[in-house]
Image (tube, rainbow, N blue to C red; front, side):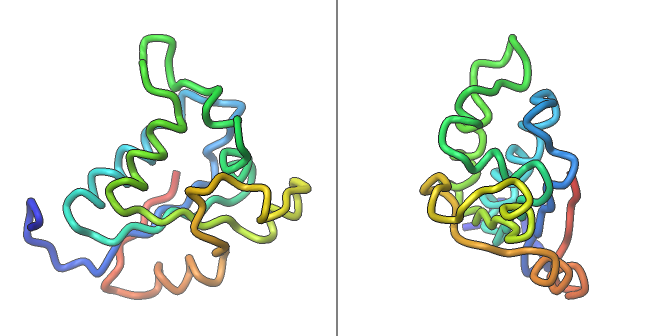
Length: 131
């Protein structure tokens, strides 16, 4: 049962400026994803640029958005996944960072890049957010 009636087919979230070097920017996208997914809205999170590093085992687990925040970035990511968000890694970003899809955390649902995100952005039934 959804919390709110909505007409959106889903929410696509692009992590572009979400860099592990700036952990204070990392929790918010996952909180928004968890909220939408908890409202029974399909959520896809696209990891591009430096954000693909968050999908490497150990990286998100070592980061906190603030010293006062108890949860790690991995905790926030897992909360979104628990509610139904799908995590997709950009193939080009993986290549640019020397990462193999087989070496990513198990929460990652596969690959999805610019074409897939743009298809969502051009679909008037979907909403998009960019972080």
